[in-house]
Length: 307
Image (spheres, rainbow, N blue to C red):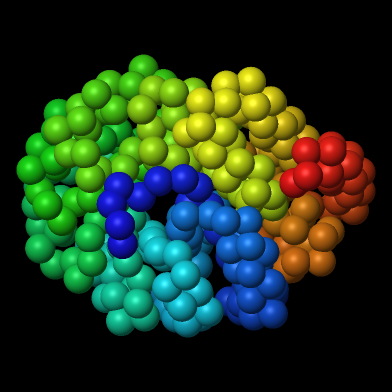
């Protein structure tokens, strides 16, 4: 894997047919749909992929199927976040055996750890891992930040190779970008796609954008426009990304609406099933009808951009 990893690395949804069953055909469709958009990598078993809600058996099957189909066309990053240290190591080993390029870990959730405890966790985790590690800052769900001092110490560890920040805090992101200048091989990736362009302008290398499951070319073209210095073009594409967020991620009042919206839109396009890992459920008929309407509007708008 060439470092720093740049561009769009979609956090792939996990197509499901039932509680513990992959939608295998849908997974195959989704992978080719995403890869056709020119993305730079693929992140599986993250938040958008409902990773912590899947059985270990299913996680292993997903890793094996994804790596087998991707065939190293792009790097595959595998989420190993877990409350159990040993299970994170197990998933990392499955990832290495299947041909993935790196693993991704957020702080263990449920009982929040202090920064010295988080640092000690990394000190113990990294030597056990068979693959390089990306840090994943997701404080809204884990209740713990990777604070900047912890990031600074991590820069001294050659097997930690990047940071994905989903905090939504652009001040933190900008400070991290300054800090990471000491390791030019470290990619800094932004999670919230509503702030993708702002993250790039602050020194980020790319984005882990959920909407790239649906419209990968849109997100890739924004990164290309930014790199080419095409400011107005990049701003226009960011406005379309914001409209996707407004159209599909805010149906209903629950945080699960983001994943439901992406999965439902994919199902409406015939890509894959939109079954959700429990305790969540797919959108009901009324919500699905709204997604279909907004999907038509979005596709019409993107067609004018040749996307």
